[in-house]
Length: 259
Image (spheres, rainbow, N blue to C red):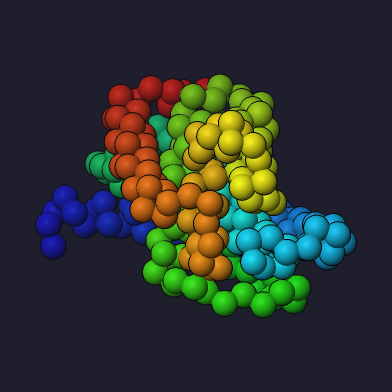
């Protein structure tokens, strides 16, 4: 094996193992709360409010919102895992040891990103299993479903990395999720179809990237969408590449590596 490749593989395995151990060891804080939150959404929005709303897009309201709620859990947990983990490494100065070690910055970035993706997918799977107690899901297109959820988890893991790089204290890692991520998610078609909006607000909604992710995932599950799937997937592929290059450059430059 190449003398440069082996230490990077060892480092990658170590980082990913540490990240997975990190959120599975404290599962009552990382895996249980989002599951409970989603169950409340199912009960309140799906059962209680959904009965008054009726069908949406040819499906019951519960069936319609489940893909969006799964995607919401993936987004928040993949983002939150990386931003908290990488900033914690900065705060403890352990990231400096990685930076001076003979490990590629790409290995470090991929390791933290994979940790976020795995947590997002794990929580998404838990929410999916819980949704089976409330409704019946039949996957319309498995390939699109898997592609969209992996790309979404990757994008928000990389965004969490950027947030962690520029954060100077623990308060900074909550600003983006509170004032940017949450509004975009709630206005991203999780609970409604944009066809209910006026033409002007439908056009404005198309600028919300979360809308494209939620609808692409909903198409994979239910076969219905408010946007063109090819546009959504192209956007996610381009966003993943651009964000990865940006994160790698930040890591190479060492910018923001000190709190």
